[in-house]
Length: 480
Image 1 (cartoon, rainbow, N blue to C red):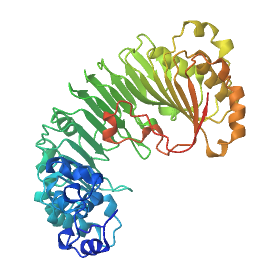
Image 2: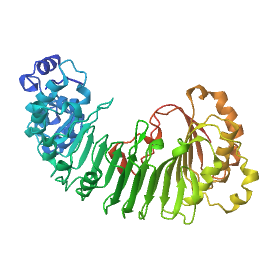
Image 3: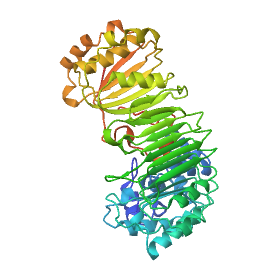
């Protein structure tokens, strides 16, 4: 495999790597501490097993490049569990197929992770990839869908299931899983399963889920051949569902009959199923995104005996006190809607909001005077996009700033055109920060946003304590 030098490595070493002779062909002195490299290289003194684990967690290119660090490292990449991701090589001049084949030939295995585009995994060469000894005992298999979609997905390669005894994570995309294959599947160690744009019958989907007794995270994005999913699992902790394919609602219903360990239920914005029913999920803490984006076909969410249509609480016969994290997407900002949801979820601690239009004037002082005295607002953090500073925005924000007594942080994401000192000066006056109910509350403005909003998830995100929480690497402006 081609490797490139980085850091304090000689030109001679670079040349040897480029010619495919590897670092063994150079006569450069080793750089590790044991051979005179100094204190900065004491990591080389760790046992091979520990160093191998470190190398296997690196991206494919970086893992291979560790061979040139020192003689102490030369054998580690070929003996450490292989982490092979196709994406860094997708547009390489040598060609993706040639590079993947060369990596699998040069590595001794075992395999840790193999990530490849599904449309490359058909034919003799693909079969040879999946049967390579370098992938023995594979732990993670990611067969990603083609970005533009495949009109007629091909069957999933049978060789992919030779890892069924060892897989812990599997993402399968853009393929057809026939009944004959699904009925024979059993994944005793699989704890994360993602199905994206998969064609599978309803009975086979149920069989596949039932064949994963240790499953903790299940992601179903779009797909066809099934209209209902029933969940009965004592191990599942996170479920994510997206139901639409273009303009069509493929998945009509999700019924969670018994999920005693379920903590997170994620619905992908305006692409949620038509009806979701939660009969038993006593540990459910995270819910979203509830949405009003499609007003004509909003999801009906039944939580025990409480019914929520889109963002409207139709029937509140029983509060859901376990939910602490909630994400909502609304077209027009509405304080009334959020207050109703807080009544439904009285123990809410984190609220994520996305609104694309200003709402009506939220005259909460007049309308909700009695409510303010009785409503126990337990919110600690509010993350809101997109704040533009209109009258309805200010009214909405001040309701929480002046009444949420344990509020710790409110993050307002604004458009870059508003990220100016004069904008912040006006907001400081309008938001009445000197009267905030929580003395420790902080107000942050940021320009960071991304197109996926609160709904851009992979199956690993279902294992996060708060999958909606995002870092903000761009500019901040804090008002206290």
